[in-house]
Length: 107
Picture 1 (tube, rainbow, N blue to C red):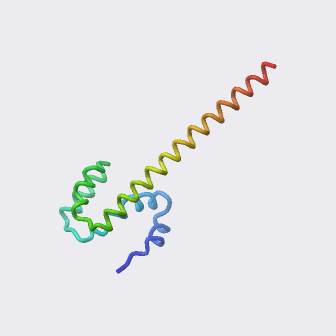
Picture 2 (cartoon, rainbow, N blue to C red):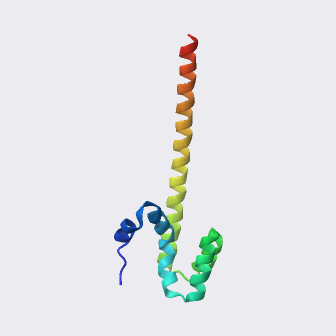
Picture 3 (cartoon, one colour):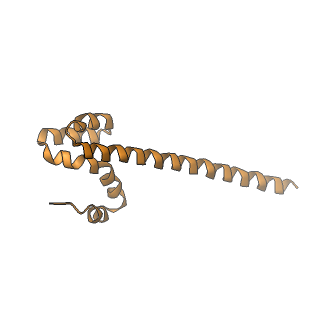
């Protein structure tokens, strides 16, 4: 049975959508494995120990699943870099406005 990821994301809401995006590359391998792997996976996720999650799951994943995981990591790194850039640009803009406001008040 194929999973309708778009429908699942709609049902999950915004927070659930982010979690689903993070967990999605692991789910096919997790479905193929037994309860021991599932319990270890859940434990590592709940501890926010992603290196342990990757160590546990990577060898159980197909090449395509590994590629999807790697693509997601690159995508997340790009999004983080963009967000950092936007925060820096916003800070510069705010400081410039404050400086100009102070200058206008002094004149």
